Length: 179
Ligand code: IMP
Image (cartoon, rainbow, N blue to C red; front, side, top):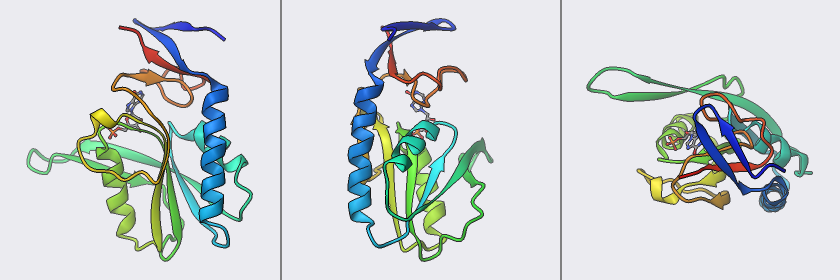
């Protein structure tokens, strides 16, 4: 296991090793399996960042369930409406379904708040959030995370699905930016 890495112009050091991350994911999987026993929830994994979290979590969930993968597009609409976040790729009908969103990290919370609002418009039976990481100090809008892996300090991280300028998603440990 390398303890520091260089990506482009930045140096990162290891924060959480794979074994620690995956142990916590197993705990989340057990909690979710308990809470959703007897239902058939649909997991909506937000690409690209959640692909490793989603894979590891779903392998540890024995109950009947579905999974699908979504993307989020973020763009400036007009000066007055500001930034718009749009959920793309949802073909399944989630009306009256038990829905669990899978996200890699919640930073300001703005992306998740927008995703939630759009999904709620389709009237799911329930809507929960599972996020592997969160930076509580960075939160700009209230977001309730039903299943949270780890709280992190307010610094840039990469690895385990998270990227820096497109790189590093494949790293199996979580790294944090060196000062
Ligand atoms: P938010 O809208 O500020 O909560 O941003 C959420 C998205 O920003 C996440 O899904 C990530 O894709 C990305 N992001 C936020 N913080 C980090 C980080 O420290 N490293 C890599 N990506 C991040």
